[in-house]
Length: 331
Image (cartoon, rainbow, N blue to C red; front, side, top):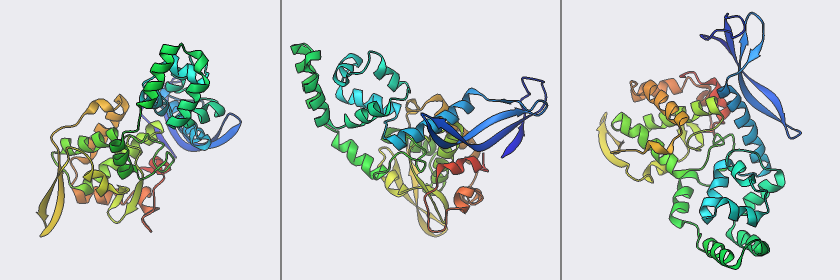
């Protein structure tokens, strides 16, 4: 797909086309099909990109590689360390990594396949305790005892895990959740963001705002915001098990209202916490809010029925791959 854009060519000052396509790119001797966006100068035919376009390509490329090889994502690698309460020096001693490797992995550097599998394995506390015992010689006695106690104290938050299971239901990072992090807090604040700014919402309209925000963010950055999967049903794309999700978000109130002589659910909340989002995520949320807020619920349903994400997958209420983000018509 290609279209003319308003920017001028950096080579001639002439017209520029933006190209959206799928290309095969190689990473560590493996080939992956990824969505790419780039500009072409009409006068010279030269291709150029922005930082955002490069980010999209590499995010999708690296996400596919991580999923294919069972390598945790950067925020998961950081969460492992924080879960155990360890500093960089302590976790480096346990794993036998180089001095700066762990912080680099947290910042996005791709681990080797063997290191990636090791990082996945230490999510299991018993395995982590085993590695600590093997690395005992790296610590003095006092520090070893301290780290040992920290690991023993790091039991899973059962309440958090229960809520995570209710919302995500065992979903794994893939093209069907936009390779997004399974982050309960981010899902909760995303839901509250739309309800708060709309001054109350019916779930049907909220479902569309969630869908468009996640898919637009994937189109622009190669990752979804919520990590939720979506399916195409009669009334358009919706988060899978959306009713259970909304039922299990703190601070969201459900009211029964009468609409067209029928009882309907209406959602309300008093506040939201925008600090959980990146600047890019907030920009996406505000873009979708500005587009959909003026629409009625029926108008949003009708617009969503024009999307290939619904047209191609509504038979049988199928899951929608995030690759459909590149065919969005609303934005």
